[in-house]
Length: 400
Image (tube, rainbow, N blue to C red; front, top):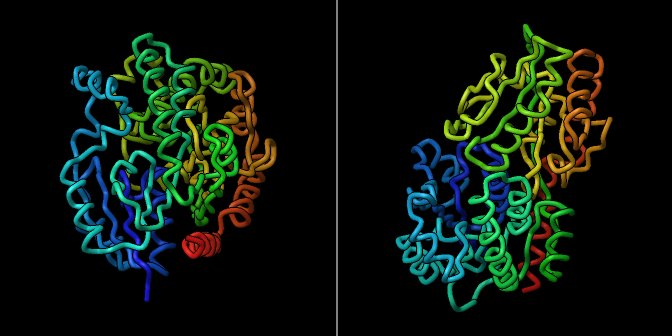
């Protein structure tokens, strides 16, 4: 008889158009092979019937709660923000608080009687019952405290820094307390596992195997030198990455390659874009359901990240398509790529720009790095990693 999992997540994973969604979908694909799953999502979007079928065809029962509070600006409810801060609740927790979901989960635990409660993203641990009768497993996408620390370091506005330091302190205590409730914590990488253990003094952790299939794309040579970035511009680490790239890196590229184009794919945020340099050869394409045409033309895929944690799964998107990557160390943190082999890694603007120039000028370097990227994906992120995830999962459940 199959054991039952109650899976609780902060985002519906279809369409898999972002790193967190891709990871969640891969986990559900693996677990659905051996477990009966009831998945509850508190989501910022309403999935279509076709998107719902992507999970139901796996045998997963699905319930989605839509909440418009998730994307609401904190500036629109400063009194509410202050009230939650006084109570010691981080914003990233209470923005996903949804009373109908609480009621549904409590009744579901009584009726469905899960053997395992699987929490996807730590802020969803608020939906755990008061009495523990199941195996509790956490799929931790980021060390949230570290994420806020990096945002604090590179944010320029004093008001935002003030908000971030409070959010970081409250998040640290929330992580410290909540992580200890779980029987096991999956970190997204060995680096994140090390950070979890060192920061929060826990030992019941392991890195979660990451599956990302090879996605071969027929190359389409661009008319002009082509640099690509993919990411939701409403996410602060993406916002900072683009701003830093446009201000401090791309101008150096244009001095040597004046006709180079920078293409950005991802949901736009006009209020952030106002502060960016106005360059005629920068193209903001907005959200795209299919990014294959852009990957097909890209000669360079940039990851100019200074903020964040976990693993930038967009790096795997590029590697799986054979597109050469240029990244900061943070952009490829948690992966086993090597500078000068599968990618170029630079932490300062001029070396970063010089790496872009090298790739744009030398097609043979592009091709060789693309081949190495595909080989890397075949070794480290192959489909068989799902088998390893299932094996470790079953061992954890058996031990408890």
